[in-house]
Length: 128
Image 1 (tube, rainbow, N blue to C red):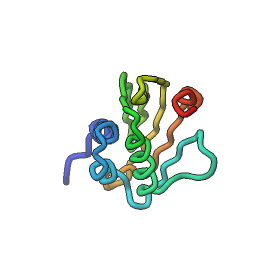
Image 2 (cartoon, one colour; image 1 turned 135 degrees about the horizontal axis):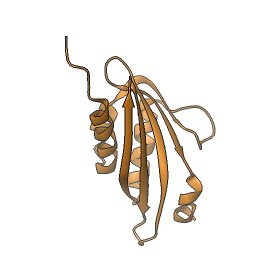
Image 3 (cartoon, rainbow, N blue to C red; image 1 turned 45 degrees about the horizontal axis):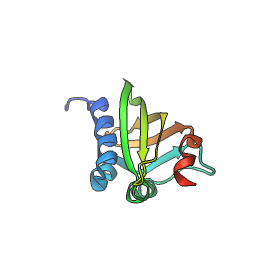
């Protein structure tokens, strides 16, 4: 019998891959049949490929993405991750907000569902 996965470490790897733009590593952590929901968006969740593509578009748009001040709780197959997201435009304008992401892992230690909660209005000035 193998040791149980360190879900805290897997969550840390997930956010580190996003920040570093390591998209194959990011995608490898997601279950193929997973559902990924941003609760500020209209409509249902994204697939693993859609989440990867939308995350890539954000980072490739010229915005610098930084995560800071992680507070994480792992229990059972769930990780609740609270952190700050900082975005910086090439012209130096910045914006930040607190985010809460709930990650649910399947029995293969892949992220089968994520629910992301943030105030997108905090970033409005970067896109105007």
